[in-house]
Length: 451
Image (cartoon, rainbow, N blue to C red; front, side):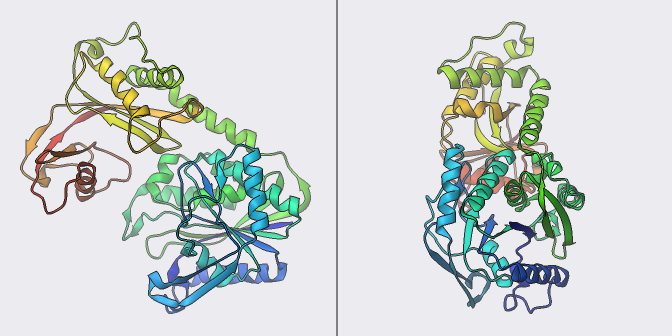
């Protein structure tokens, strides 16, 4: 038997951090959940949190027998928590994940303190034992598959369990993080899916919308839903509000006893494959050349020969080129040249594609089993021009090059998550190792983006 809930984690809701009156509707929803869990009296509470250690390609499970934490970072060190871990269940989860070839385990947790994504729910819900699980940057389908492993472990040990998906919705609803239409779209869509008990619909959300909404709860929900796979589930929104520009969604997922359903996993995988196919079908010659070259190099270690019938502009013109690779909406590699270094644009794409998939120092080389999940873009750069100051920049239209002595940092235009000129300059300076107190010059450039 299993119960499941989605809860937000605003520290302000904790009396002491706040005064006990903030976000009253969310507080009331928490109290309702608290009473249901007290009546249920679970053996273990599994908390899925976005604020513990997070890896791009690995699900982290907190190790050990117990842990503690406090709200010291929110100026309330007197509010403390001590919890016992259900390490037997945690080991079972990791074991089933290993059987299913899902990267998960106990590695890499240096700071064992509880995070606020865990402590805010615990403030309302006392639990005998917990399992604390982090998100990963893996695909939506992999979040769901990992959730299935959680359920298998619960059933295997006969645990009476509650699963808490801890996570806020969009942070782009007009508060300190700014406003984006993507935030409104994201929250309305997720809320509607839960109101309609449309679990499959959650997996159809555009990752670009989720990324630009700056949410931190979607993958928590997906892992939780995986743990409910094959069960008849009715979901209900208990409350939604966004008083400080962050969406707080509270919901319950009720399992109908004795009713089994078909697994949604094949449909989720099919939806993922359909999205990738749609992207492949819409590729132009620039992106297609980058993709087939990267696929060939990843599998064989060799660059491709130039295909026939490429556009004349790719063969007769020279330009700087950046090749970018994404996996599940996250950057997987990006390397480029400011000025041309090859005999034409086609060869520039080929050589920079090889570098992006195998020599980007931020990432391990791309492996063959990743290729089905990758998407690509190619930026063709116009020659840069010197500018006097940042007033001549436009983050949507111009990329920027910052030069200080021998150090140089570049950032492309119109990037997801870069919303201001200040952010554009800051990231470019970081990439170039340029400090804010160093003198520097600015150049701007335009691009033609193929994706």
